[in-house]
Length: 217
Image (tube, rainbow, N blue to C red):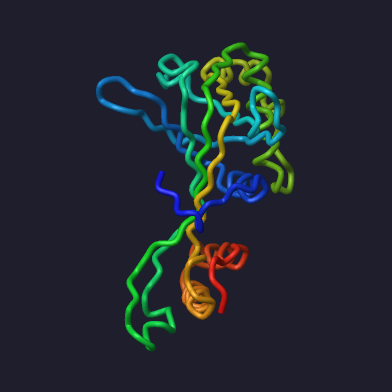
């Protein structure tokens, strides 16, 4: 992807934070003559680095009817995680009143994760993946649901209908386009403008306040 230096994010902590906050990733796998195939899937990030996975490991599962697990085992794959994003109006820049030389843009944060796809089709491995995913996403519930809360025979039937996927990550690249290249006054104007918009715009304003600016006042 096109990645100007001032928008590049390489620190593991903010990259992992975005992936955890926005776990629905877009898995892109090689396709046939029609081109690449994309599947939106909820992922669990295990950040522990290993020789096989220096950037951590992604875990998920797919329906057995989804051909991706048959078509792409061992393939080099890309998973894209999209954070807060939104339109930036030129009206928010104080520079507009000074000289008018401003244009609209779009701010966003994203992480691209790469590795080779592994397929886990044995019941114990699939159960482990589903249990970890469930524990992660049920954590904020008043009474977290667990896989073993369901009747064993029902759980066994459901597990036979899915296949586990594991992606040891060899690369993590972040692009956090958050007005780092604008003057401090313009950044403040964008944050103020975003605060008057919806929830996602306000989340992006929070991201901007955490980003390291390229320019000074």
